[in-house]
Length: 320
Length: 301
Image 1 (cartoon, chains in turn yellow, orange):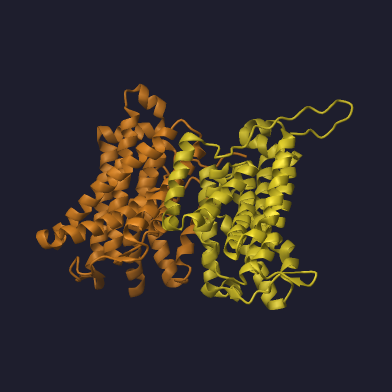
Image 2 (cartoon, helix red, strand yellow):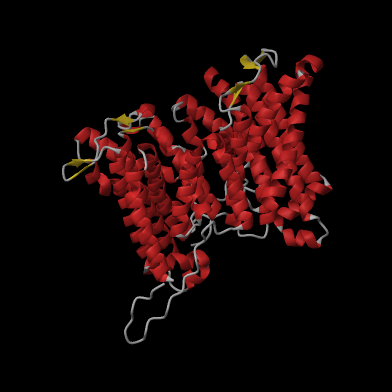
């Protein structure tokens, strides 16, 4: 079982690594978008799928990461990729600040608050808050990222940066899912009262998941800023949050393969059917309703996890 | 002082519209404990259907401006109520026994579908309501120059709210709605057909939302397919402000929010107008999640 998945991932990696050699620039760029949304989806999945917190304002954290990179790069000329940790930090801190007082709200209220926060951030960016966000025009002239003097410029080069980042994300989030932290999240999502009864500090774990997810989205924001070299508030509208949320829900919340598939379907598929470009959001809406009625877990739902009890003598980390 | 009263009346008129939309949220929440995210889009549909009816039937030419607008509002109410009932049947009824959050996702999906369906049918551009719908008269009230439209909008929303309040408080059906909101199981044991109550709530709420859409079209003159989200969120804020699930609360909350917003736009900053409502929303959920007069929403953690 495990071997098959490993081979599948290996085969996938080979195909993906070869992709830019076969595809033209346009399709490589589509894959870049798929990759970025996959990372965003995975970060949101930690919040929605694992912690069970409905976040419809994820674009706000993405925006804060992007603006952190853009402002520091354009004012102080710090190389963009060096700002990755800082983008994560600002997005994470902002998430901590807003989530701390509201984390105890019931699911649907949390959802509304995150929508509100997303809108406040967008309006703040448009209104040129603190005089550093450039208002409705945004910020331009962001440097291209550099790795050891190699300037990443063409979509093909970004492709490797983005998909490498995605692979690292998948690897880390897979580890996280099976860690003590991930198991605690799983428990509290399934039965909060029982989890609390077993000594899991639910508010703490929910908050951690929210902050980590937001910080990760901040890093994607950094890469987005570097890729576009221009960012403006309209890139971080409410629909971005909806898109991320939809891909997590349709793909399979709580399931990494599900989210990857979701990103491919929601970002990649509309490119195949250009004629339906206008109708795609309407179709996603219907798909969401149908999915909730017929297949609540998404296309590739999270599988129930099994853990073996550690041997009493040698407490080995249990494998899934 | 002049500006203050102008903003106050403007805020009350907009607040009346918020209150009408908020009533839909709060009634559905009261009975189903569901935030009907698609409610804002029903409001949009009301505005667009109103425009279509207006241009295709030329009601104001036949019935005169006043009765024409009344007939238009009534027709928009009826049609949107049907859409609301259909929405309940398709997107919410199959999920009544499911976990709450499944229904929330379904509501979101329905909302995305409805707003984009409006875009596909009418196009993404702004649509304009005829400007000569109501005669452009300014009334002179106690030395205050008020546009007729503003006064009529406020009056209409007050009349509808009063009617709804009396209906809920004084009639048998209204009592049934209140009973179902308090305890569905007990209501069922008392012989109340809860399914019918839910259907009724999904007729009344969208009807009020739909007429609010027509009012916005008449008051501001232009409509857009995304306006359901902003108005929906603000009306939802109003519902929370008054205490969700509480019908008088939604009315008070709506009027209050309208006034706060108008004052904020006039005396603080117009650029931040849309952010004011969201800040209020977050502040209330942090400080007093029950709203001014409502039920408890925070879970103990």
